[in-house]
Length: 593
Image (cartoon, rainbow, N blue to C red; front, side):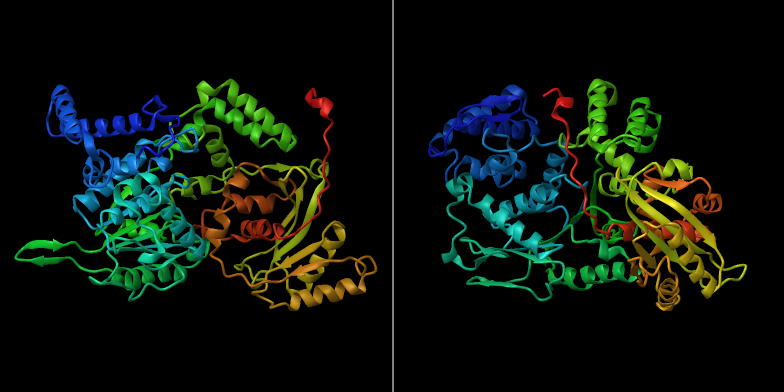
């Protein structure tokens, strides 16, 4: 390792400026821990380690050396030594200190791949936990350096994920620590080398697939034989489209159990002795809904489950009962403040009371104030993506409705305004209501339901009502009407009525008329936090409209969902409206410059 330039290395609260000293420190540390794990006293472990280092002094880190031999049975040491440019903070990289969760993951993989205790495991981990690097890439390097896996396939969501996995894994395999001990493993002369597969010099193969491609019947052949996948990793394979309907969810499960699971190979037993392990399966991800693929695998008794959250406490109870965070929340949702001023105030407040507001997270990457913002702004996403909890996502639904007067609402400057209507299927007493909204997005980025009504009207009167509301709000530029009921005839009628009206004939209105198939509860759940936190603000005059929203407890337990369903559709459609924003110039003197 003499050719490696010495740099500052940060590990165990120490700073190493010599690469060889760090390498020796790391090897000695793990050798001592190994002896202690075998019941040696600390003194005995130190003496045994010293003797082992002296005995292997001519070849500590080279081909077949002590580090090479020891790492084969110790995955954590392999990752920290051979992949140290990825996992150890140095002055020439941006690596973070590893957290206990990462070491726990490697310990799980040690049991599975080295000790061969089980063949299937699911890792449910928060977004941003570096799960792909810690598991997929590091594990693939280990398995193929030691030929523990002849053919590994990794399945990601998109082709870009597959390409990135191969690029990153190749870079890790080409680092000087691996080359120094295992030789050159990545070279075109050994076989295929492209953006989605690598054939290594030791006659093993790593291949990446996107979820949309088929792995049915995939094999790898070399001079020694033909191999089915020996390790299969599914990494964050889900997208939002995979949870929109029950059929979409079923399709994912069918693909896994009928195609991917069948691509592996069974273990070989002779004379009651295992002579070949079966294919190892890893499923890695973050759940998107309560009955998605990740949560379904969690209930599969053949899988061991490793589940961690971003914090290990009841976040609802903590944030609701912490006075400092509640004040922070009030600042966050103060619609009288410009975004720039709000950000400054929030940062100043958190800095001032940081000791009272800090809490323990799973990794130093997760900053308390950033997590709190996500929780207050988008609790649903926070619970799903960071707490990996989809069971309690919609537990609170709409507990708070922020409503203001029409005059107070009109004090704001609106940059997008649209009318949106969800027609009712009939006008009988027991039928749903037609829901009509005039909504706007203001310069402060809050949404204002300037008018919200639920009403039972026949076809012609409903069209008349929509035309009257377009006339009442001259800044309406878009009209969105659900297509499921009248299949566009209502839009044609409204356009005819507008053409005959002298005030409206010159108005340029864009009409949106789409069929709606998305699950209502899934759609409505996306705006729970926006309503509860007051970033969607209602008109206090529209009591019947807002009272219906307050009663919503999911489709299964609520008679009418017309108002809130229309609000959720407004939040979807209004995002598609593109406006040209003026650039705001700040007086530098206000900043003291």
